[in-house]
Amino acid sequence: MNENWIKQQLDEAKAQGLVRAARVYPEAGGIIKIDGKEVLNFSSNDYLDLGRHPHVVDCAREALDRYGIGSTASRLVTGTLPIHDELEARIAKEKGYEAALIFGSGYMTNAGTIPILAGRDDLIFADKLVHASMIDACRLSAAKLVRWAHNDFQALEKRLVQYGSSKVRKLIITESVFSMDGDIAPLKEIAALAETHDAMLMIDEAHSTGTFGPNGAGLIRELGLENAVTVSMGTMSKAMAGYGGYVACSSNLRKLLVNSSRAFIYTTAPPPAIIGGALGALDVLEASPRLGNILQANTDYFRSLLHEGGLDTLQSQSQIVPIVIGDNEKALAISRKLREMGIIAAAIRPPTVPAGSARLRLSVTLAHHVDHLERAAKEIIKAVTA
Image (cartoon, rainbow, N blue to C red; front, side, top):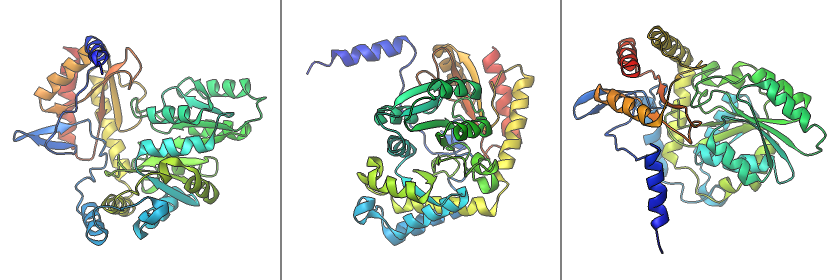
């Protein structure tokens, strides 16, 4: 088969500064060594520095020793092990819901949940900046997708009123902490609109789990919105430092997902070591409930340093701190310059972010101490303003 079309697409992406490659790093975490030199990694999602935490690693190892490397089957065949049930019970308790269900990844969680909540004749109202996995799940559902201006609950209200006469299921989806802007959704206002307009509400807490709320339970729990939010979705790959996704929900919805969600039914159950590591991460969060507070305080200080240097961090209110550059090639050049200075700050480009908003997407983690933050801020300001 002729593959000229592949080269053409790659050439077009290169001309726009959009070619990507999976760079190999010698290790993971907020501070790593490359060629013997200490490098500050501001592109890691290991927000609480749990990736190498002794208890988390021990729990993963214990699960590996007890169950082996894999679950060896799908959950509805013979793949459900005691450790899966244990994690789901723990997540439900921490999130304040009746039940929980784990999936192989955050992407699979959204792909397996949204099409169950809304179908071909239904309506989904999505914040314009929700994660790509949510948008793909909406397309998979075949429901009518209605977008609303980012974090503008009044725009959402207008959309809900516009479609108010529809006698179909309505689903509102948003994130609590947005992964590229680091800002926080007006969850109370959105929840109130969901109740007024008889709509279900699903909130992606991938970046607020572990970093906000009691014991890192997220913003839904912090704001007391458990009864107003139909589905609390999250991942175990950010602050929990592992892999996998989950939903916390009612017992009946869990039963429906178990019986209907293709992303749950038709795949092998997550490996035991991953589940063990997640349980270990929850142990750490319970034993050290202020980790998220410390992280946010450190990030506030880091943002203040960037602001003093004249940099704009948009509406960031979390451990995610964006610096918009605009031009794709310029963002890449700044990222390369920082790498030479021992700082990893990945250049995020379209389609991950809107066209014309290429940026450095900085993640503060608990691996970064005050001196690291001060050094990084100084070099970032110098690189961006040069």
